[in-house]
Length: 321
Image 1 (spheres, one colour):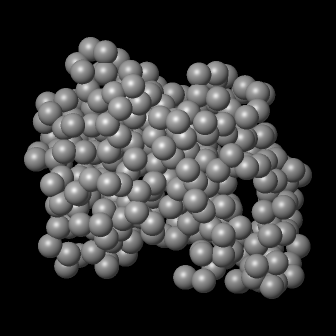
Image 2 (image 1 turned 180 degrees about the vertical axis):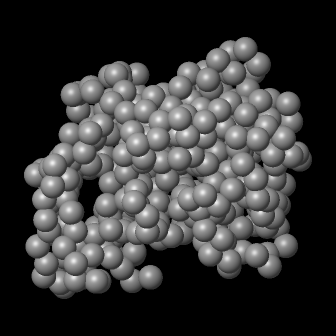
């Protein structure tokens, strides 16, 4: 990973909620690589894996805390002595939220509120949190610009929008510093192909390795702004460290600003893996956005965010690991 900060990280203690998950564990890797004073992970291991953290277990600056953001006391304990929080813990997946809206809400809204309270009470400097492109909902406008959203299309999207509302209220009411990062289809190392709600890229790679045709929902012409995980790590680090007060208490798109269809993605991965396999097609998934493309000018201007890894390069990185 490239370096995305100028500060001496050894002066700071960081909490990564959901740090055993995909994006969280990549953040842990970055912070430890560049000498963070302390990196504490809070995770209940419901969707994360201890194996994602195995290489850090003996690191003197690393600390793992098993706990649940639905428990306020766990959140408060995790925030003790912490300077910056990167809140990645959540129940992802639109289909999961449609099947079980109550648990998705408990984790993503109740857990988020608990973290805000803990951050406030512990006087943490700032909380950067994982927002979502799903917040754009039924808006047909492309590219997606932060201040223009539609109505949510799934319970998951509702929870992520509520996070932004709560963050805004805590900023205005209690002076809590937050920055929300609306991720657009992040992919990369440590992203699991296991489980009913796995993301499309690890599923495609696994399908080609196993020789089993993957299922593409709809006609495959739906488009996404796929974002390699190192770009998401960059955005988190820059959001935690940014000094400009005008950049704080805002939300930002985190993406590459490039559009690719699911069919084109499949063909690209097939070529890179030198495999030949035809997918099967099924019905469209309820709650899915048809087309997605981010405007990343706000993040470029305020956070100095510049995505350095394009989709093809990110796929090549994944396949050589």
